[in-house]
Image (cartoon, rainbow, N blue to C red):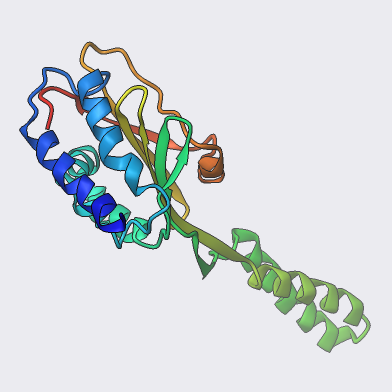
Length: 215
């Protein structure tokens, strides 16, 4: 049974590659075939079933992401399960975090200069130790500033619209890529609830060229 389940996507993949349709996004035949291809894989590790090497998936991701394909797939390979939420079939990578030292703000240089000046006064007068310590504490706090840079990716396919969409976060910079239908009408991607943490109001949305021939 397990063998048959794993062979089914390969058979359906051949059917998909042989299928020629006039529209990709919104095409019901393509959507049904993709559903039959991806649905049996839900619950599996995407790396074990070679999700990203399935021709129909790989071609669409390559067309959609362009130069961002490799970094996106690298992150997606950290996912351990293909998931489903209603008509959405998706994978979400682990969130990788990198701690980096933030550039010191401009006021630090001023504080350091002030500390030096106060130290000179202390040496001359000998009664401003408290002020020196206060300035030094401010400088120390500024030096401790760090940034946590996040990297992650999520890919979702919508069975209702046959739209493929990807969110990519590289070192804290977020981008969304979404396939679009012909005609100039933008189709907003639908995201599963568990992927919402990857989305925020500062995302840069990049849309794919209008989809033409089915792959």
